[in-house]
Image (cartoon, rainbow, N blue to C red; front, side, top):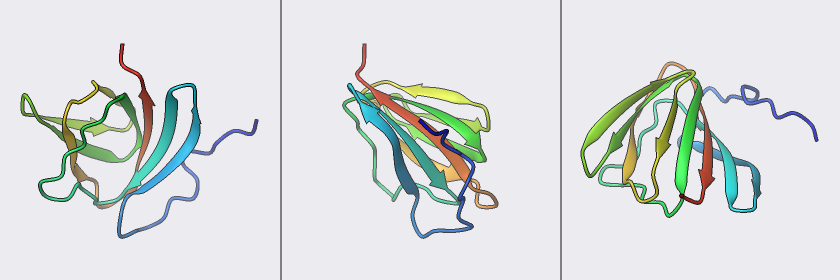
Length: 109
């Protein structure tokens, strides 16, 4: 299996975040997400059945969490876990550089 270059092919700007499934199987999905000045649409919240752990590989972002309300700032090297059904949204991503996320989705437990 060939290595996956997480920091390769970073576009300078796209109208929407880019999601790329890198691996999937046995209840686990790994995605690379590219953001540059993107945020979730007003009023939109993710509410996922699986747990999600994100690692910011490059750039910076801020997540907004609900129930209870909380804001979490993430920079390169940070890892953060969202329990299943913890409503969240992307409040901000750095507009001056591409934020590269590695997101791991898996069954809670």
